[in-house]
Amino acid sequence: MENENVWVNVSEHPVSGLSNADELRVMYSGIDRGTLVMGDAVLIGGGLGRLDLTGTQPVREGMSLTLLIFLPRAEEAAGIAESRVSEVADGHFVVDLLSLVKVSTCDLELYVQQALERQKAAR
Image (tube, rainbow, N blue to C red; front, side, top):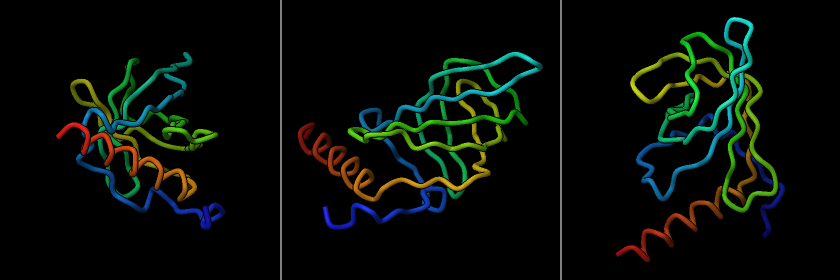
C-alpha cells in the first residue's frame, strides 16, 4: 500500500460503538502492591486519550499499566508504555494514555475493512 509508512496517533482519535465482532484484544500488565498483575482485555470503547476495557484480572484506580493492542493481521501489537487506570466499575476499567501510541494507517485501514465486511455479511 502507498501509505505504508504513514503513522497516526490513535490516542487522538475517539473509539466508540464497537460491536462484539469488532472488539480488539488487549494485554495489560502492571504492579499492584508489589505483585505483578497480567491480564487479557477487550477494548470496548474510549475517547481522546483513554480506553475502556474489560479484563480478566482486577486492577485498582491509580495503577500504572503497560498495554499491547492487537490489531487483526498486524505484524506487531501496538504498544502503550504508559497508561493509568482512572476508573474501575463492574466488569470494566478505563485507562488514560500517558504516552504516544502509534499504529500504521495500513493496519487501521485493514481492521476497518474487515469490520465492515463482517457487518455486511451479517445482514
